[in-house]
Structures are given as structure tokens and as C-alpha cells.
Length: 135
Ligand code: HEC
Image (cartoon, rainbow, N blue to C red):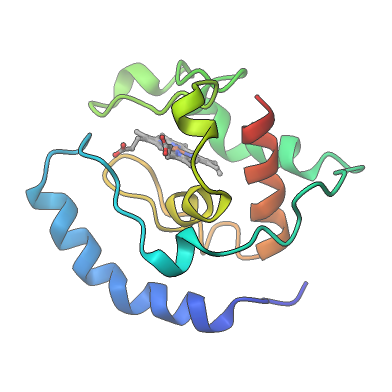
């Protein structure tokens, strides 16, 4: 499928080096700053019904090992990493903007992997975002 956010993706690559420098020197569980352009980014798939359950399927493959079956941050690998894994069932998670969630999933930090190259299809990544918001 087409990459609809090409300019944003190239921006990500540019800011990645800087971001990784910042995360190395800061406390891993500090609040996670999201650039304004991502906070204001609209979810192009908001309210779209995922008939094929793409989001759930990708979640099962790439996210569940850390974030857990129900998204509570208690996956089988969660205890193997130092950073506490985010709990997607908390209101504090759900209340943030979709663009912020997208940014975090795409770029990652510390023990949270960057998924922009692992899940290069924007629609697929948005389907996962919609899925984790439903947990
Ligand atoms: C290797 C373990 C691991 C895997 C696999 C993983 N995550 Fe994470 N994730 C984390 C950790 C640890 C954090 C907390 C990072 C921090 O606060 O520094 C996190 C945080 C997040 C956040 C930010 C949550 C918040 O409170 O704002 C999002 C969004 C997220 N993960 C999405 C995903 C998605 C989507 C996938 C699968 C495509 C995934 N993660 C796979 C470990 C993982």
C-alpha cells in the first residue's frame, strides 16, 4: 500500500539520531515528548472497522510479547526488560492523541522498539493503534 506520510517519515529519520541521544541520557520513564506535528496529526482510519482484524493480528505478532494479550503490559517478555511496559488499558494512555500514539509506536525509545521499518505500511500501523486503543 502507498506510504501516505512520506514527508513525515523522512523527518523521522532525521530526528532519530537526536532522539536516541536524548533517550540515552534521560530517565527511561520520563514523560515522552511528542513533536507538535504528530500530536496534531489526524488518524486517517479513525472509526474504520477492521474487518480483516489486521490490527489484532499484527498486535499478536509484534506487540503482545511485551504488552500482553490484553494490553496490560504483562507479556512474557515484560519481566525480561528493565523499563516498565506501558499499560494500554489505562485512561492516561487512551486519553492521549492518536497522533502521539502513532509517533511512539513508529519511533520507539529505550526498550520500546521502533516499528516504522518493521511495519512500513501506514494503514497497518494505524490499525494496530486503533486496536490497542480498544483494549
Ligand atoms: C520488547 C518489548 C516491546 C514490544 C515488542 C513492544 N513494546 Fe511498546 N513499549 C514497550 C515499553 C518498554 C514501553 C515503555 C517505553 C517508555 O516509556 O520508555 C512501550 C511503550 C509503548 C507505547 C507508548 C505508551 C504510552 O503510555 O504512551 C506505545 C504506543 C507502544 N509501546 C506501542 C507498541 C506497539 C504498537 C507494539 C507492536 C507493534 C509494541 N509497542 C511492541 C515495550 C515493547
